[in-house]
Length: 96
Image (tube, rainbow, N blue to C red):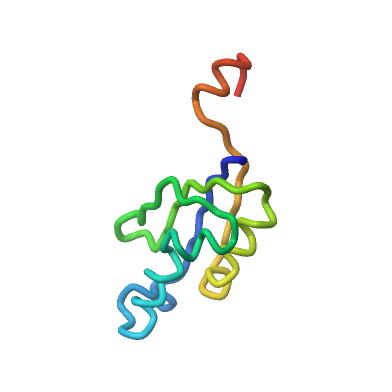
């Protein structure tokens, strides 16, 4: 499994958290049972206060799985998927 850092940015107007219909759907989309359907394991997630930015650390076999899992979020804003490694990995190999 590979590690990925994902950033989703949306506008204040497209923010799903304050929408009574979208908010429950958002939580369902971000649930581990839903992620598992795509072969994705959610390691961590956080929303930057006041920034309309969601950041996630995900594990998956490849970028395609992460893209598939994150596809609903591209309807609300940008989705940036970056390959990453754990600190232990970069220390073992001696470089970032």
